[in-house]
Length: 437
Ligand code: XUL
Ligand code: CO
Image 1 (cartoon, rainbow, N blue to C red):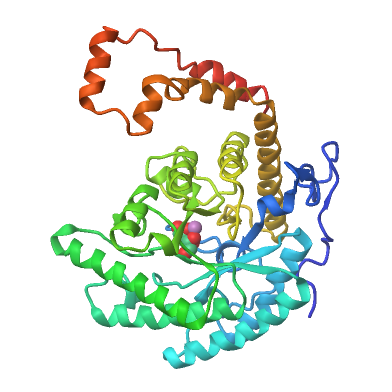
Image 2 (cartoon, helix red, strand yellow):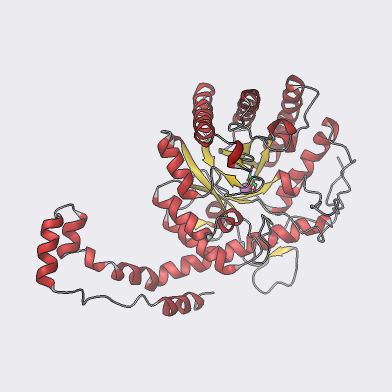
């Protein structure tokens, strides 16, 4: 098999002063941060769909990417030629994980039986490539949004046949993920939403989604798959409204349908901003429910209102992300999955390396900065102090459930008025963070 990237050797850590664009300046895999190697904190993952299958087309133009290994077909033969390219890429980059949709790695056949056979052939090859390279599967998922059969959705389709087909597809994708020892499995509701309420029975669709996820949990147990299930929130696109719109909506949905014990969330930056939230907001909401599982690392564009899936190169963003990840004790099964694509103007294969190196270095810096902020302690101390009225006296009584309205009324009457408020010091804190960046 000829090399797909013959002029690129393994990307090394060369440190801050290096001028080599094909080297890490900050990501030093074995370097310890808070007593743990950077590679184990960050658990970087490359996505098959953008990196291998993204050709740079958009609503106005065709693909632009130079991918010399592609033969222009979506055939099984091409699938088998493409998979080693992904592994060469991950190995040269030093990314320990990858992620895929079933249809990224193997093409649809003439019918479901044939499609499943195609997947079996490729999974066999992926298994060997994983064994030879040590690169592992962070998560698998099923593509339930490209084919016209899913025009009305999959689990939430008005058409029960589409639900049944989606169930068969997820069953197979779960088995493939299990076979490849995936650390997790993601449910992103591609078209699980609506474009108009005029034709939609919202309650029935949500009930169907709940039922579908229960069937998935049942099958997971049946086959003995131990990986983590995740829901990936996104508010819109392709539909006008997606049921899994943000972290809070997902948690509420999971709670309502009795699924909270079986799922965590996979939080994506660009989805958070589409929902009108910051990434850190979504992470904090998930972490507060002990349901922060993994992240899709990317970023949107401030001036474009859609899911641009750009590589994350903003230090403020990665610092904030890593502050929350460190606070929750780090990833268990999850990782930093680059659900990101190079711009269609960045069409050369080498741009795939530049993009991932940029994302990895930016996350490595974010990790180091977050660890330094934590070690410094002033930020944490400020927040602790801000809530100190809850540590004793009336605050402690309220938190312990030992004060009712009657007692609180007596307290307020005696107090007269609230005279103890302290400044929130937002500007002071923003400047404090800047000290570290
Ligand atoms: C779409 C998206 C998906 C999921 C996997 O916006 O993020 O690629 O990550 O289906
Ligand atoms: Co994603």
